[in-house]
Image (cartoon, rainbow, N blue to C red; front, side, top):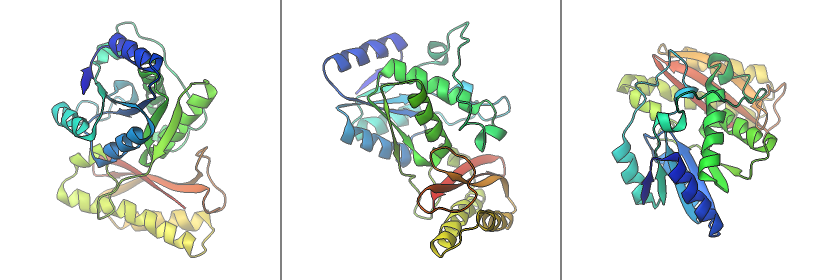
Length: 280
């Protein structure tokens, strides 16, 4: 397994792989890898000849009062996990490599990113689209794999790829959960045992909503009200949003159409911000 820090070296290497006829799969991450990330690597290995994992905590997708400085960084552990999973290249650039002095160009997707997390994190998706476009230009992937837990991010990146005619196919891997239902997230490392127990209410609320739809409920208001009520019973949990949305556009749904929508939510568990969603 190779580890590359230089943008120019990574780009040259990727161009060489493409010229040799290799299909490249990219798994963009911010490190602190867990089984959710590793499942995306498995998808990449099934679909591509060479797998690149980027590990870069991207400062442009964090707001001024968010957790950029304390975001978990465990590079040596991440490299070992990548090595064990059969990754070919880890791209681990510095901030100055990705955003050199005088950097001033950003990418905005202006529709899908506007709601949900885009309201409470107004600059987040600008940072996501910018860094992903840069990674696509550097690593030259034929396919890029993201996780369903970040459903809005997936929709935003797919729209960027379509709108900007990028030669990359975006694949979405299923959310990976702990046995008790908690969606895997690097930010779970922030949770104490008590907070983690409270965080379980998030996935439980989503499964309550799915059960209601499976039993015939078609009212969006009822679904949202039931989830909000369930979360309100947990004193450490504060709802940021609960919404039923169309899967591809993230537009609010007016009625439940099974198979075409997600119920998605964000909540604070004390000082930790968590997101999750489930297909209806």
